[in-house]
Image 1 (cartoon, rainbow, N blue to C red):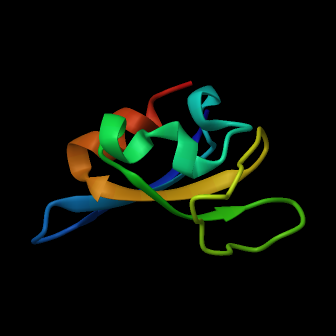
Image 2 (cartoon, rainbow, N blue to C red; image 1 turned 180 degrees about the horizontal axis):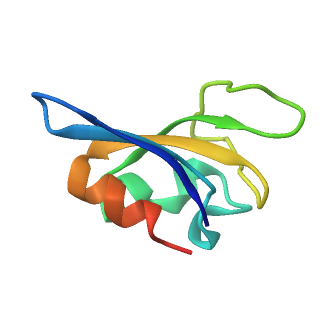
Length: 84
């Protein structure tokens, strides 16, 4: 997985990152993944070959080759971005 961008948002100590989706969330509606509870991050938008950055919702399914935009506390964003 590549991390394209990590931006730390101060003073709130939150961050956002543009990353490839890790295996743990691919092919599953985001609402069923539990990533907000288990990893403390939110997927806010996604990009596929066919779409340009629509907002993500609970029914969004991301796959290998997509790109996601995640936000949350800096440590959680950095940790999630390291998942494969």
